[in-house]
Image (cartoon, rainbow, N blue to C red):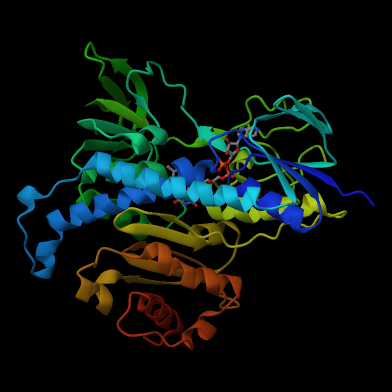
Length: 462
Ligand SMILES: Cc1cc2nc3c(=O)[nH]c(=O)nc-3n(C[C@H](O)[C@H](O)[C@H](O)COP(=O)(O)OP(=O)(O)OC[C@H]3O[C@@H](n4cnc5c(N)ncnc54)[C@H](O)[C@@H]3O)c2cc1C
């Protein structure tokens, strides 16, 4: 029997997982993606942003945090060498991209074509000059920054995350549009290195799904770190000054007019599916209202021979989902009968100082599903390890079913939140109850003990 011909479009995280999985299951796989190789996470997403945030956090800590520990140093000579930081980041991502490329080119079951793909019909595509018929295809072309249509936008000062990550000479002032993960992380990166930053966010509260104490506590902790965040501000228009700088005109909910002047305006206002040039019409693949590739619970598009995964589907733009869905799209492309993609808890985080993280349901989300819940809450100021470390800005809340006592979700901010939340990710995946979790011994004194104390409060043991 001839092998099933599977075309995977896009060699980012979703596409690489899809290609490797389809090859593992016996498909004859072609993976098409134009240079540079690597995808968003490695080239201009998760990895470079964290590589630059780390020195910014250390720089800030040395300047402001040492005295809390009874240490002092002459900070007058402390330098943040931005070109050196960017060069360090570039070298790191080059290595990561090479290693990702080897994992594809070294796989004899995958033929890699370094070119863009465009659909010609329901079952064929053109890659470079080559016309390729396929039995199944996976679209994994990712996303690009979304710039909202606000009057007065000018290329003279418009910045996206891509620009921040390659910038070797920082501007004096930046307005960040959007207090989502990218806006807060990059806003803090810039402000900790001495740029005058203002974050402007239309929503207020910052996140209406999560607990007020957690959301407000997190935003307050960021403000304390030196990052001004303005919530509930609607942007009306931009103006460009003679010297090329920008003015943002905004109004508060109460109707007050505000203006912000800056060298650059960083748009961290979300991302849109990267579908330009794919000719999805030819493939009979339809889109959602938001312009993403629409998929069913099998990750199948409106053309049942074509699957999609990652940012292009408009699902949460997270690496963990891109790889999981990529693997499932590759699986389903290779199988005769596709598998339903199981809904798994999706932990998510914001890598600011302090970090924010959540997994599963919040109390308000549980309520909107008519699930009665019990909750527990503890600030880091009641946690021994956080007190010892002088890292008391933080809190955790856990949500469990009032009926079954199963843990349904958790949300937190504070030092190490992005790692600590995995304890709750494990609990959710193994469907632990607060009673079964309570049997786990925790090392004392650790930050992880916070989970134990919150659960003790919920079971009445505290
Ligand atoms: C600044 C920033 C920081 C982030 N930090 C985090 C984080 O800390 N944690 C986290 O979970 N997520 C983070 N993300 C999001 C995460 O990077 C993405 O969700 C994930 O990388 C998406 O993977 P993907 O495979 O869907 O798309 P991509 O990795 O973008 O891959 C798409 C690939 O398709 C190729 N392509 C496009 N069009 C075509 C075509 N016509 N033919 C062939 N190939 C094509 C592209 O060149 C690209 O290689 C961050 C994003 C940004 C922007």
